[in-house]
Length: 299
Image 1 (cartoon, rainbow, N blue to C red):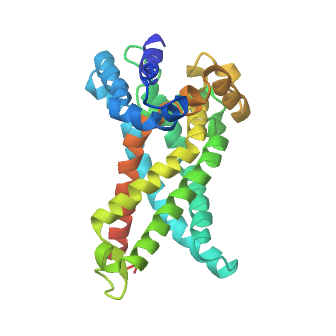
Image 2 (image 1 turned 90 degrees about the horizontal axis):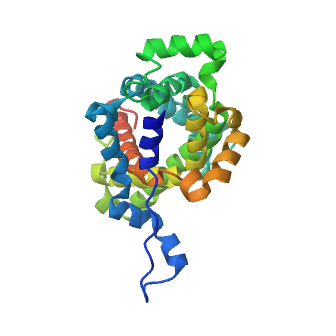
Image 3 (image 1 turned 30 degrees about the horizontal axis):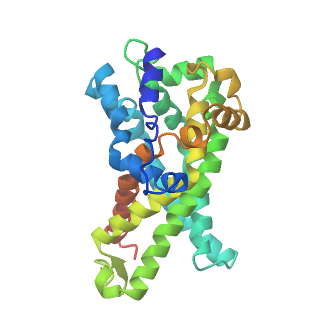
């Protein structure tokens, strides 16, 4: 556990340097904390610490469970989004940008519920450190959690903060991407758009614009929902953490994290590193989906 704690501690942002005269007060330092942290390279401390302890393959722990989870998760989320969007528009009469927010939230929650056990196993495998392995692989992790943590319900520990976090994350993500897309194609169709390959009468964003809009959507959504993500991870780890008994419910977990670490070093700890993961991930996800819609003649 000491090695795991050291690896997690490495992700903690370094203390602020003294403020030079004439460069702004404390408010300015707070306003630009995340940008300065990113530019300073402090977010890469974990990328240095893990290889030192476990080799470079340590960076890919839990990747197998992630790969198994990512296909059904993405497929369910985007399929559900289109279904909910149509349902909300036709049955509830809600249109404009609001229906994207509602449909995205429902789609995200649907995908999470369907694939949550795989996410649980991924987190458990990723947290293990060399020499202290509890699980030997994906199948062993499933068997152990089922046998020792309450059967099937053991796989859904931390589901509530995940759903509460996914609702704004997916909702804002789809809302932001859809809004950027529609506004961009309305005001600068020639500059930003091109005819769809499956339907020349439909305009779609150019690939590089798609990537930018997807990345922006992911960054905004991640910022809003991140405290729930921190809570989810702590609850998923369960008995692996020494403070397990203080983090049995979502309320207790958030209270514990805030009380011991505050907002910046607690509820938003590791956010800047997550930008590195989330921004390209969402950029590629939205771009791939738009390309697949053309490939399968959905426009």
